[in-house]
Amino acid sequence: MKGLTRFFVKVSQKYLPDAFLFAIILTVIAFGLALGLTGKTFIEVLAAWGGGLWGILAFAMQMTLILVTGHALASSPPVKSGLKAIASVAKNPVQGLMLTSFVTAVACWLNWGFGLIVGALLAREVAKRVRGIDYGMLVAAAYSGFVVWHGGISGSIPLAVASKGHIVENLTGIIPVSRTIFAPFNLAISGAMIIALPLLFMFMGRGKTDVVEIDPALLADEPIPEEDPKRSPAARLENSRIVTWLFGLMGLGYLVYHFATKGFDLNLNIVITIFLFLGILLHGTPIRYVRAVDQAIKGAGGIALQFPLYGGIQGIMVTTGLAGIIANWFVSFSTPNTFPLFTFFAGGLINFFVPSGGGQWVVQGPINIPAGMKLGVDPAVVAMGISYGDQWTNMVQPFWALPLLGIAKLGIRDIMGYCMMTLLVTGAIIAAGLLFLV
Image (cartoon, helix red, strand yellow):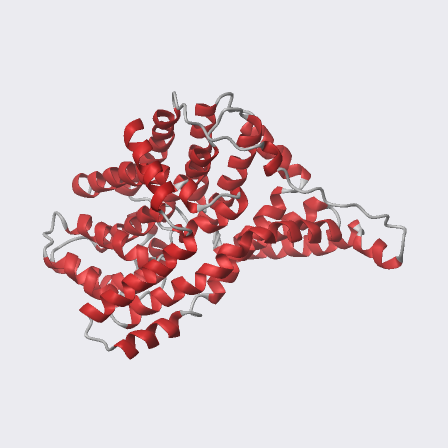
């Protein structure tokens, strides 16, 4: 295992380009495949790409805000104290890796946006406290927890099929979460991965000699400057705790109303709302929160630069029908026993080009659900097969790593070699589950 890990680390560090160039390469590949397989002309593919460039701007803004508000929340004194308390459980590098991967996986199963940020922040705190820990492996452990998200209670596909008006409702009706998220096979697969991740990083980290540490000073947040609140009426307003509490409690009041009327609907916008208003309250004054956000926004450059490229790739995949061709190819040689497995593999491949659970469902759902029903496969299992594919190849797809890397202050090549090991181990767990548990 150590030899294989070293191989992937060396390959990724030597040959893996920056995440921006990775997105450009994926664009070229998708463009070429669309030209060769869909029968579309160069101009039609070009139009599909250009039309998709700005198709995920709202989502890009959400990801920017979750990074910024999450980071700003973490820089507040109470949250810093909480992270330090959790990080203090780890007494050596191996324990630090195991703790980070386990906490992140559980958090991501509960809510992926929350877990992604918690993982990055916990990794930073562990790196400050535990000497001799490899920082790239530690951040990879944090990101690896994300591999369970789509089988968790914020999974977009299982939540979609449990809602009225989903795209294949005429075929399947409403599929309750008791048949997807809380089905025994999914709980077994998700639970096995949550347990396997700390063990994987224990084996990879134990006895590691080529450790690349990071100076804890580089992870220290810049001090938020204080002002004399008596200097002027404006300064007094900026430093007013009354303003903070009035506005913060207004936000918390809305959250109470939201959960009281909609149940445990912890969607991405609500996670951002929680981060935002808790951050405002915990920083104490409006100006302290403003300055914390000013510091946090520095890590959002990757999102602003790369998300339009993935919008263009998604435009090619969906508009030209390329994603449908890939999905149908896997369907063509499936049997009732292997259909869930090949649905999973198809989802993993399509996820490289459409790294969005909702977008992937739009592409694969109308193809795989009817095909599975003809073979006698439970639509709930097919939906989860797509979900597993979507979460699985996130381990080698930089799209979702960008917020975490922005907080951790690392590049994609620093973690990808370790994430390849996560891909192999979790892929085996999911494949075994789909073959023997459904």
